[in-house]
Length: 273
View 1 (tube, rainbow, N blue to C red):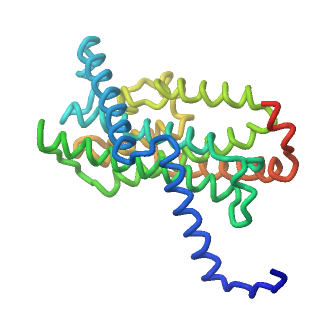
View 2 (cartoon, helix red, strand yellow; view 1 turned 180 degrees about the horizontal axis):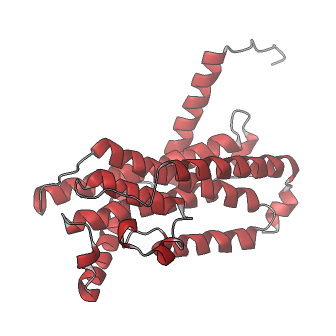
């Protein structure tokens, strides 16, 4: 027991971290649902309910004329998929295990692995559910035609990445202001129901309305995704660089907050939440 362990090489250490992230990701997926099939069906049902609700709302309010010319349901889904992926990633990171979690008592485990596994678990469920919904739509309702599938999927990853960044900031605030951090995270999620721009496209907005939405990185990701999805839509008022820059800044802020919390948070403070 007193033998000195031989130092690992960089490759060995990297493989060990990847193995830890993999097993922790599996654990994070199974925390909510013991059955992986049930977790997938639950995610698919949530997505289909949102798509149905927005389809009904667009039809009742007569907003279909504002949509992009093409498959109307695909237009709705292109916004819903990115919105759900963003919000679920933020919620998963915000709910990741902190420095006082019992899992952190195990030597190889740390908060960064817990955050990474929560984010990857959320991405896995959302990507699989998205492909299943699109496959069912393709074979049951109408064949799907996407102009640039790789670009559209890259925008989904960008929406997930910005969600991880936002969740990391809220997670860094949670040990110090747990109540307020939860409220801010909830307000951000509710605000994105409208501010994400999934109900309209940037090209159709007047300038005074565009200024109310272009601060949101998710708005840019959704608008760019529709540019990759539909051959007859070319986004002029959104770009890919902005959400990437915002996500990187938020991740840096979140990591600094998380590092400070890891060094200074106590078990008694956590028990007081």
